Image 1 (cartoon, rainbow, N blue to C red):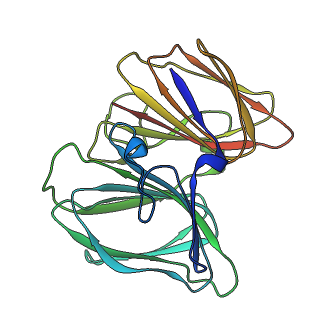
Image 2: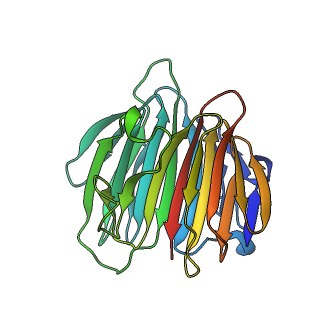
Length: 241
């Protein structure tokens, strides 16, 4: 089963200093029928204005994954971390027993756009941790590059660790190029298109996605993902229980 959630169906939150598109219930958006997809609790597409950001605030028992699409994001936390994250950087923060953090835009004139995903951890009360890495362009060109994984094993080398049985992949897919992704019967797949256009072919049919669209997939056949249109498509694919 595949459900396409269009960009327009997301909830828009515009506070002036930040523009967000929420794929699931979050903050002022409360929809019990759209609260999560498996252990994925939040998928927010955020754009922070220059010199703005989230002031330091607490979390616990969450696995928080962020991916910087454009601009520069500054991360600080109560573990002593202070990082400037350029476009193409992914970070994972395990809130565990409790951590405070801030995410801000240090630029004086350039917005920063970043995705943020929240996952339930595999167990509660873990020790908080933080890690990040820059994903180089050649790593995800016309392939699924694992950027975050709690599964380990072959095929996840180089991925940042996360305390949950999920793997997040990043891909830049050129027009006309194809990728095959084996969809397992007992797993879920969440695919979000950042830019460009793709076609997904599976047993449920053919589906064309535009920027901001997402596909939530369960109990389907292998997926064929094709880049369409004139520009390279960038997307994130999440495999989760």
